[in-house]
Image (tube, rainbow, N blue to C red):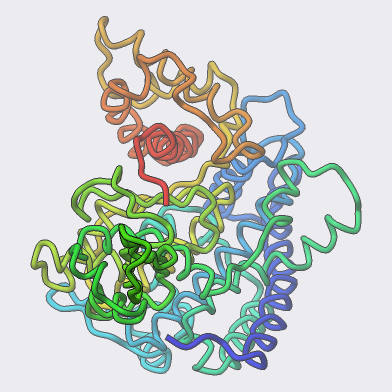
Length: 510
């Protein structure tokens, strides 16, 4: 798939930077109208708006916005809204952006219960009134969210915030003016987050402040060019495949690297960057120096320059590729078709089954920034759908390692009791220990990220107790709306458990 040319990349950069400013201004206005940061709710709010304000404050507190109040009532007290403003702006803009990506790839699906049907933004506009949406963009965003429940949390109060009409219309206009080619290029999503963070990165660098949890996500954003990604994958996965596929005769009799690459090629995978080397040619010596003869040249066998990775699993199904700093998922996106081709060759899977198998078994990713994690998940899902058509995908093995508990240890331990799930005498202590360990493990997550080491915790936690903890987290996630604080902590805890499992697992590194 083609990359963005310079003019399109520049246009995308301008649009994304302007969109962040516009979206944050609109979010700040909407949250200000609701009085989210105020000591108490404005008198003009309806009962529904007051409830939304309360839930937004709880969500903001989990994001890290501090509340200046000694009251246990989440609706009372002055509260910061900086992180919540960023969240509302990001989610609203990117839900629309992802909808346009899907639409321009004929993958935005009308949720027909029998057979989903691809629709365009214009068709969404025509359907909007019948579907209870204000316009086509709102409906397209709703369809995108339904297709991507792992990316856009369906019950998040963020999407109940109504941006001011002028702000919403401006964002829609900016998105509509981007050329179709932007959404069909292979690297657009990789640039999106870097452009979104560009202004913040400049501000942090100019301030010369010590880099902490708030500054960290913006500063190290770097886009890895496609050829670099392919070179690394071809000389790891490709070298492993060559070590299994090439015979002794192949390595001894083949004349050029190009011929060797052809011998190990797969449908859609030509290993253009896979390098082979051979030792300098050796000359035969003769026993009798008085005998004059022309020395014969003995050619050394070829071998992959990176080695053959003999310590790796013997089948592609067993390979685990983990990107601990996945960014927008660039490496995982490029690894997907390679591993799918390997599994098809070894197992005879259909294209769709091979892609699903790779997503389920082979690809893993971690990222300190939850927004990057979101983009990576969409990037991987979009790639899978581009390859083999829309369908429900298996759960993706991607997790954010930068989420902190934002609650006391006692509040965290109380999750089990508040979930309503039965606790036996024998299970109580392991459950409490597990939740305490989870709190301890992720307290410094916003600065440590993938450097977190669950294996340093007592061994009674993630090896066996994850299965014990899971029903309590699931129950807490199903809690009633009036227990929103429990739900928010449970959402965070579930994400932390997933990240801890990936961090503690025996994953093969490329």
